[in-house]
Length: 127
Image (cartoon, rainbow, N blue to C red):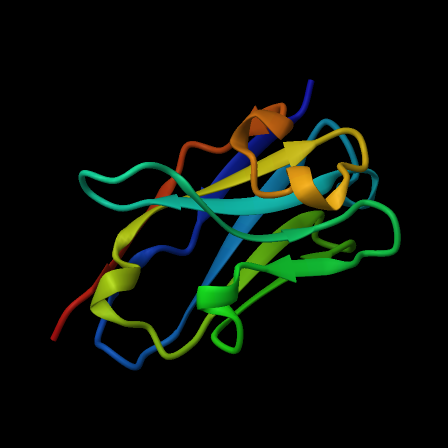
């Protein structure tokens, strides 16, 4: 059974950085396609970034490109989300998620593609 534990959220000033980490247990991270979604208050959950199982190819939603980077750390068995230049509109609960297959590109940003979810970690951006 795969379990995901999200961490790394917190309060940061505008323009600051945070690195979220998703610790994977029950399976090695390199055998999973991993993604990060986020849900802002009063809004639907939205895709942020993903890294595919095969080849480690990464995808970031257009609005976050240049600021958010997803990666995986095989030694630590984690999938991480580096967030730079944070803005007040980035305030949300961030969720790590995993799929056991290798989703096609058009399904990466669909929440139902993924089988396992972390508990979420709160990111707050405020001065």
